[in-house]
Amino acid sequence: INKIYSECQGISIDYGIMEKANNVFVLTADFGWSDLGSWGSLYDNKDKDEAGNVINGENVLTYDTKNCIINLNNEKVAVLQGLDGYIIAESNDTLMVCRKEDEQQIKQFVTDVRIQKGDSLV
Image (cartoon, rainbow, N blue to C red; front, side, top):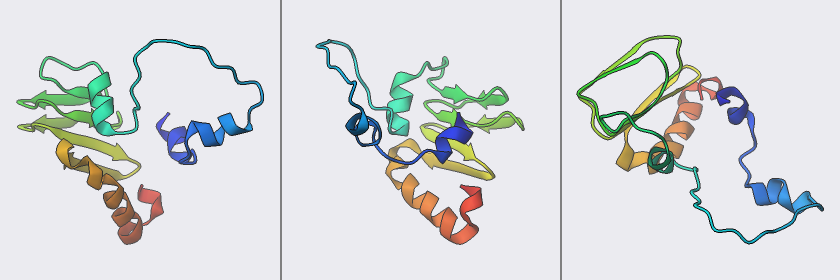
């Protein structure tokens, strides 16, 4: 999913698919909805461990770490200690650690990595 998702064009479903489809129907329904377009909304909607961490990665060990979003590949072991309220994520050869409250800066971080280190690292 990480590889394919990173190659997808950043366009909403209504522009990318719905406007071009001629076989779309609408039904009235009452169900929960959350736009998973941010790390915060992902955190709100994923299962958490006993310390309130959302962990996506099989080789993550946490000690005194709570309320974090951890999205790491399984190629190496990650040991996280003493963190509270952080996003820890990797993509390609880039590791990002930032406070959840500062997630609005992530787009700038990505831009900075591209400019300073090259597109292949994002």
